[in-house]
Length: 585
Image 1: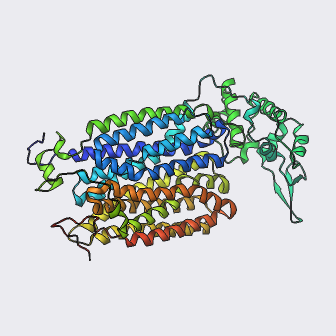
Image 2: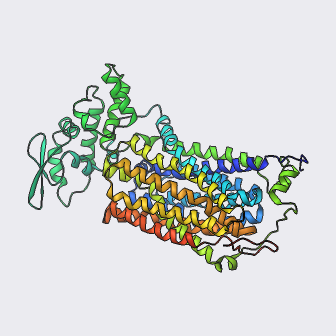
Image 3: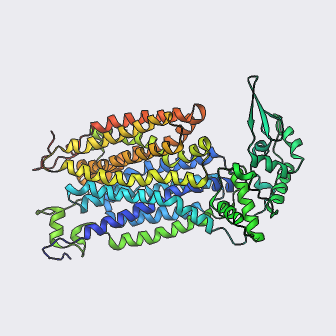
């Protein structure tokens, strides 16, 4: 029942708030897999390529589910469908924590993607029902901002949960099967292609040009504390026919366990060369430097994490024992969010007891609005050039943007050897900067659309311009050597892409009308095809060519996205509205 107060109520703000909350959960659940991926891979015995397939599986199913999910929301309304989508993806978030192998993981990731497919098409549908046309860009930016907030808090939140959910009875010594890559373990302290010149220097023969480099002191110290039989083992491992065997894994496990149980193992001088210590190790080092004495349990954990700092991939990590619990917690959180959405959401302002007549007129206009069930507008979508420009732009912009939340951390680790905390902080910076791009982009496109200005330019200029600025930032990266300068470029990429996002959303509402869910689903489907292609494509380019060439590839695809973005025309709806004319000048 509608309240008849003359001053507009604020029900629409509550609606947008729960949509933002949905966005926060969406990105926490989606991106947490990337943080836990090393431990999932180790626990299930998978390769990096196999987990890469699992990442892609999400995006393929997410993309294919966009248009059907958008149509279902148009058909049955957001109050029913949005909580249902949240419950579905939260269920499969928890189910990922129960997988035992690759096939199950692929299936759960695909089902999880289908569940999340309806989130943003439904969000756009809600905005079209609840927000006046002049404010849809800003409202879109707020809903999308929820996703960026979730992405920004996710690395720290997931890390805290991984650390604190390790079982109390966790054993910190190694079993033989926890030495995942014995060849790489031995290779770090007896490098292939190197011959020792002294206890400090090693000589590398590259095309008969010998050069001497320093072996890091912590690796030299580790070698001195490992069994002497590793010398013979390293020689066997140089043979082409070498096959990993349990006996060698056992020798390495026993060597590591001797170090883990040695309370006096840490040597400040030897580990001064370590650039990558996790936070727990850093705290232990500070305690030792202050003259504190650690307990036996604390010393055991400290030594285990020291070894993991040296061998982050080659030996099984402690957090293999806690990643499943993290996903169970995120799944349970989804139930609470779905309940909040159900309580606040209504399909129409006219059906919400918090919405008075003044707010209803503000949203729908003096004549009101009646929604009818409509068939899927396939003919109209396929015959609209702007829909194809939109799809092309979203495809290519996602190919490049996904680098930030997938391979950026690997780049910082492989090329610049940043510590785990530095890498996490560097990943967070672009997502936080993206907040401001999202908010300013929404305000800018709304400002451009006011006062009789061209709706076409109001959407196309920030859309194409944002992608072009992101392309320039990627193109600059090969000229930079400092990792924090490259992080600054990634922040510009995130700001620029997020500046364009509200225009993308507003465009779908401008042209979609009563088909807005289907229209957003069409563009978002192609955008996520781009995301599905991005992971293996960028990995291949970086491995076969170089990271610098990968940056240039990202710049190139963003230029294509920019050109398509400049061509979209929001002034031409799929179905012209009788008695209403958009300004297009």
